[in-house]
Length: 477
Image (cartoon, rainbow, N blue to C red):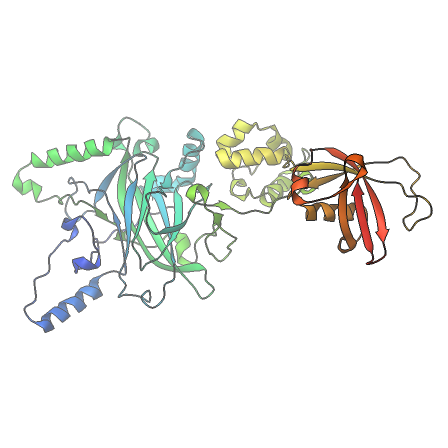
């Protein structure tokens, strides 16, 4: 469940050179220059002790219409890429001694308690109204130092990535929902609900799993339609400028960047982060091959026979349907489809499934329900040539029947192994496979020849046993 954090003062290190940033007015107070070397060392040491180990800076200006001692508020444009600088103090912690990667999880969550209690319903309603869209996204081409970014297909408001604390790291993020989408009356971004952008950072434990929580910070934002944030910022500034000097002193100045304030960790962060494909975790499975420059979960490819065997039966009960969803990697939707039987699920159209599960998983679920299997790259039909004259292989007096051979790799080795299995011969004793060509010549089968065989071609395999060395020659006619 989402919950509200009490926000302390923004942290920022005293020595400006430790955390370089374009917004010079981020420094709340400037240090007095020391006159003696000893005084300089004391100031440096005390400043380091007050500096946090981590600092996250959102490169967007804060609103000037926020009163003193209140948390800063930042306005963002929908879909615009905003830089978040991931800063780490190398003099604090053990990062100067080892160059281990850290994992950070970024979330867009509700600030209002009323919406926090209705989080699941609000997000499901947003998903239903905007199928295939996400609340939070990473702009991978603009990001610097971000490794293995992962966008979870079902957690629309969460992204995560690895980064090196000893190197410059900037992640560019986009928020695609606007604040008015979660209000009862949707008549203007100024009346929209505030969000929180929160980052939780983990380090790798002895097993190499990113399960140990290090730091959490968040900031308050409101999201407007494109260019709406700029207009709101201008309106707030003009409003403050019209007030008297005494009234202006009640408000904070507008800073060029927003420093995320340290906060309590996300509930899942206190123990371990949720297992996600491609990022090391207590229940990790191989992450990704980057999806969109990011990644997608790796999964074993099912053979046609296995896919057919796993088709959902129309007679499946609610329990059997839930088990089928788990087995086919749709566990994230079990709660939503808790009362569906097999017949109920099979009645849903492709568009219905896309609205429920999003574009990617909706199409995958549609294919899984139809038990659609991947067509093999090459299909051949083989029959064994009848043997006579009392040779080692007994004579088959029945009419020739053909069996299918499916090839995926299109290599001579794959064809040899499939023929050995079909003809019940040891694969290591097949010395040669050839194809009968024009005028009865025998052409040795090669990878290039296999790739150029016509699909659904029919062949009769003749088996010849040789003595020295002992083995078999196969001839395809």
